[in-house]
Length: 122
Image (cartoon, rainbow, N blue to C red; front, side, top):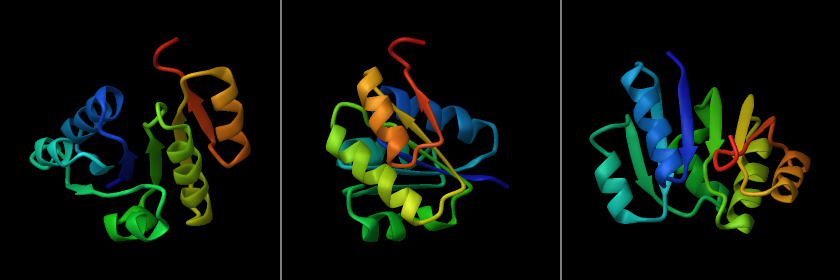
Protein backbone atom coordinates (compact mmCIF):
# COMPACT_ATOMS: atom_id res chain seq x y z
CA UNK A 1 0.00 0.00 0.00
CA UNK A 2 1.24 3.48 -0.81
CA UNK A 3 1.44 6.11 1.91
CA UNK A 4 1.08 9.71 0.82
CA UNK A 5 1.46 12.68 3.13
CA UNK A 6 -0.37 15.91 2.34
CA UNK A 7 0.48 19.23 3.94
CA UNK A 8 -2.46 21.61 3.78
CA UNK A 9 -6.12 20.74 3.89
CA UNK A 10 -7.51 23.62 1.86
CA UNK A 11 -9.65 23.06 -1.22
CA UNK A 12 -6.84 21.44 -3.24
CA UNK A 13 -5.30 19.40 -0.40
CA UNK A 14 -8.56 18.07 1.01
CA UNK A 15 -9.94 17.16 -2.43
CA UNK A 16 -6.73 15.31 -3.24
CA UNK A 17 -6.72 13.56 0.14
CA UNK A 18 -10.31 12.42 -0.25
CA UNK A 19 -9.78 11.16 -3.82
CA UNK A 20 -6.68 9.19 -2.81
CA UNK A 21 -8.34 7.74 0.30
CA UNK A 22 -11.30 6.58 -1.80
CA UNK A 23 -8.81 4.69 -3.98
CA UNK A 24 -7.36 2.85 -1.01
CA UNK A 25 -4.24 4.96 -0.53
CA UNK A 26 -3.09 5.51 3.05
CA UNK A 27 -3.22 9.29 3.41
CA UNK A 28 -1.67 11.39 6.18
CA UNK A 29 -2.87 14.99 6.39
CA UNK A 30 -1.20 17.82 8.30
CA UNK A 31 -2.87 21.23 8.68
CA UNK A 32 -2.72 24.15 11.11
CA UNK A 33 -6.51 24.45 11.34
CA UNK A 34 -8.20 22.24 13.96
CA UNK A 35 -11.52 22.41 12.06
CA UNK A 36 -9.91 21.03 8.90
CA UNK A 37 -8.19 18.28 10.88
CA UNK A 38 -11.44 17.29 12.63
CA UNK A 39 -13.30 17.20 9.31
CA UNK A 40 -10.64 15.13 7.53
CA UNK A 41 -10.09 12.71 10.43
CA UNK A 42 -12.95 10.50 9.27
CA UNK A 43 -11.72 10.47 5.67
CA UNK A 44 -7.95 9.89 5.81
CA UNK A 45 -5.83 7.36 7.73
CA UNK A 46 -4.38 10.09 9.97
CA UNK A 47 -5.11 13.79 10.30
CA UNK A 48 -2.96 15.93 12.57
CA UNK A 49 -2.90 19.57 13.56
CA UNK A 50 0.53 21.15 13.41
CA UNK A 51 3.09 23.44 11.85
CA UNK A 52 4.65 21.94 8.72
CA UNK A 53 7.68 24.21 9.00
CA UNK A 54 8.87 22.16 11.97
CA UNK A 55 10.59 18.89 11.03
CA UNK A 56 9.59 17.36 14.37
CA UNK A 57 5.94 17.89 13.53
CA UNK A 58 6.40 16.16 10.17
CA UNK A 59 8.09 13.27 11.99
CA UNK A 60 5.25 13.01 14.53
CA UNK A 61 2.69 12.99 11.72
CA UNK A 62 4.44 10.00 10.10
CA UNK A 63 5.80 11.72 7.01
CA UNK A 64 9.20 10.01 7.22
CA UNK A 65 7.56 6.75 6.12
CA UNK A 66 5.72 8.26 3.14
CA UNK A 67 6.35 7.15 -0.43
CA UNK A 68 5.31 10.60 -1.61
CA UNK A 69 4.43 13.95 -0.11
CA UNK A 70 2.34 16.80 -1.46
CA UNK A 71 2.85 20.34 -0.22
CA UNK A 72 -0.62 21.74 -0.92
CA UNK A 73 0.08 25.15 0.60
CA UNK A 74 0.69 28.04 -1.77
CA UNK A 75 -0.75 31.05 0.05
CA UNK A 76 2.04 30.93 2.67
CA UNK A 77 5.23 30.86 0.62
CA UNK A 78 7.52 30.50 3.65
CA UNK A 79 5.56 27.47 4.84
CA UNK A 80 5.64 25.80 1.43
CA UNK A 81 9.39 26.40 1.07
CA UNK A 82 10.25 25.22 4.60
CA UNK A 83 7.99 22.15 4.34
CA UNK A 84 9.47 21.19 0.95
CA UNK A 85 13.00 21.59 2.28
CA UNK A 86 12.22 19.51 5.38
CA UNK A 87 10.66 16.73 3.28
CA UNK A 88 13.75 16.71 1.04
CA UNK A 89 15.97 16.44 4.13
CA UNK A 90 13.82 13.49 5.29
CA UNK A 91 14.59 11.82 1.93
CA UNK A 92 10.96 11.48 0.84
CA UNK A 93 11.23 9.79 -2.59
CA UNK A 94 8.78 12.08 -4.43
CA UNK A 95 7.74 15.60 -3.43
CA UNK A 96 5.01 17.44 -5.30
CA UNK A 97 4.40 21.08 -4.46
CA UNK A 98 1.53 23.39 -5.29
CA UNK A 99 2.55 26.83 -6.52
CA UNK A 100 0.52 29.98 -7.04
CA UNK A 101 2.98 31.59 -9.46
CA UNK A 102 5.84 30.72 -11.79
CA UNK A 103 8.33 32.33 -9.39
CA UNK A 104 7.05 30.31 -6.44
CA UNK A 105 7.32 27.19 -8.60
CA UNK A 106 10.95 27.98 -9.45
CA UNK A 107 11.80 28.46 -5.77
CA UNK A 108 10.08 25.22 -4.75
CA UNK A 109 11.90 23.36 -7.50
CA UNK A 110 15.23 24.74 -6.29
CA UNK A 111 14.63 23.64 -2.69
CA UNK A 112 13.76 20.10 -3.72
CA UNK A 113 10.26 19.65 -5.15
CA UNK A 114 10.30 16.97 -7.84
CA UNK A 115 7.17 18.27 -9.52
CA UNK A 116 5.29 21.56 -9.37
CA UNK A 117 1.55 21.83 -9.94
CA UNK A 118 -0.40 24.98 -10.67
CA UNK A 119 -4.04 24.08 -9.90
CA UNK A 120 -5.23 27.64 -10.47
CA UNK A 121 -3.77 27.57 -14.00
CA UNK A 122 -4.27 23.91 -14.95
